[in-house]
Image (cartoon, rainbow, N blue to C red; front, side, top):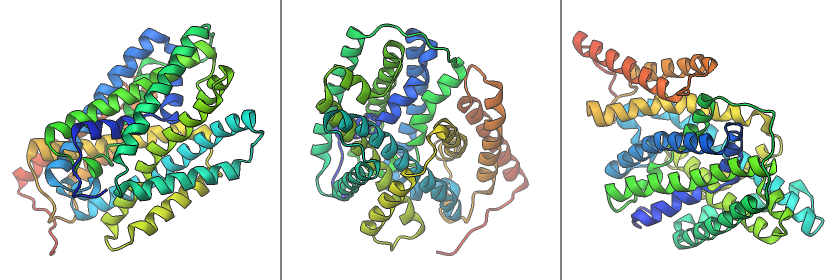
Length: 402
């Protein structure tokens, strides 16, 4: 994204609302359906407030430092520490690209089969991947207005779908169960998955206020709406697949538009941020080549990714990025440290590693607060104690020559 072109609050709102309007969000919201509508909506709103505040806070760091997320993370993690997180981020972004392409292609298959008799998965996947690649390539060339229009159109079409479901659906019985803690975790994780990306866009914001409010309300509004569509659709129709729902309502072409546009406006952010994360490791690599590489990698993975492990993939994201960005936020806003001249923030990486281990311990006990909130508290406490001990013992950090 061109650094010279500044993004106002509304543009950031539209960008993050567009990122949130996706089939992945609808499908994740459907997992919360066993809680029922009232409790499900409360959990969705609460989880998104928590995850959204973390997301927007990290975005402010990017705005102040005028750096992409993973380069800005050097302030807390040190140069090589940011490389470690860059690798994990690239892996999750390629994974998200594949998941979005899979979900889009499967939904498009359902629609085109009903409309035209076309079911070729490889062909539809290739077409979708090409659209994502082109959208990513032209992200530098004034696509912001087109993206804003697409987001508004998607919101309208999604609202029509939700209204149709409520009018025609009948409450379905489900034999599945989910605890409040697990549901809350699913609501928190989705905004957390965007935390390593947010500064890639807020670094071009016009103001800190626009950066924070535009990002928070854009993602909160779009993601909560998508989750609620998944929740309500599953409760009333027994499925959260928008293509199946809209086809049953005789809305095949609007369904095709929703599925394709929502995938493109979300997945291009994954590809673009994978490019920016790679430039933290190898600044001289061509961005055009990286766009092609990551689009192709995502498409190839989409041919074989086991979607039954989707929920585990979400938990993996939470286990890594919740503790890591707890350290980043604490260092920046509490301790006021600048570690760009250090190789590693050893205490920070140890604290984050401990947080990741505790994540998988805590998730087994299914606390009502989920795993992310306790893990962030534990990570912050461990990191603070380690920093105090290090300062008392007057232990220095490993520096490097620029």
